Length: 329
Ligand SMILES: NCc1[nH]cc(CCC(=O)O)c1CC(=O)O
Image 1 (cartoon, rainbow, N blue to C red):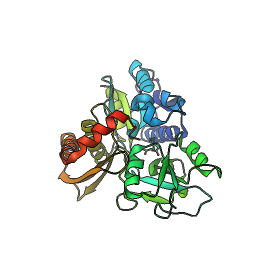
Image 2 (cartoon, rainbow, N blue to C red):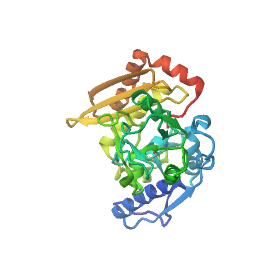
Image 3 (cartoon, rainbow, N blue to C red):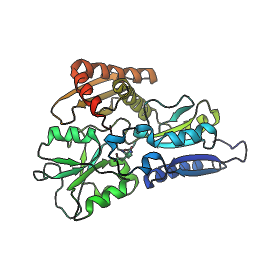
Image 4 (cartoon, rainbow, N blue to C red):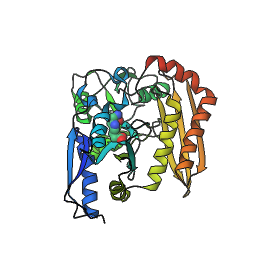
């Protein structure tokens, strides 16, 4: 249990979406339960990424849109902790900040939601020309490859907005793809028609999907000790391996890369990853299983996977994409 040394409350910052708030409240409640004397406040911020709801993500293309303003407040001392969706955190974070902990990861898979008035239950059931709402090239590229009968249209906004757009009977969308974890946290999982993992649906999720990243000022020992209580070793190692893969491949641009990590036996991590061309016509894929006991080994797995994908031809795919500047997610 951590006792508060001063009467100063711990300030948690997050984005102003319903999902971000639910996540921050979850972290606050867990911290309160473990440290009842602690006073905790949540501050929500309308970030640049939230403000621009019109531009398609492939065009604005800056992952830091969601994080920069919060990190400025963290650095200046106005906030002590930021609760992020890990997948929204750029792989390079500011010098003044660090990830203190990654709590147990929720379901990292993507999920299909079909327009409420339609009877379809899986991607295979969808008719020729059915429109999938997603602004993620990772999703559309992988799906084009496996389901050439589908079409894709940009769909932006927070989770509830997207769902409302799809359910509108006049909408152009037949269905949409979202993260299972996001839907579950909002109590919307009853709407999930199909889970899309490699074993079902065939696509790999985004780096860090389904996990939270708890960011603090670098070297803030008090916050390190506090958040240590919430960290999960296996989720952390798996996510760090995924983030190192992305960091190695991205080289300044965004990459449609899908990944899946799974602990096999107690200390071996299995990582499968794919890099796909935007139209799904080309792809490179590999799977590595290796013993992981610490952060260094997790990082090495990510780099080894990146090297393997490059030697399998990922470079040509990535070069073509750099000129188009799409978004990862
Ligand atoms: N791309 C935006 C985003 N960032 C995090 C989540 C949900 C939570 C998570 O998967 O970690 C979502 C929504 C989605 O992709 O469907």
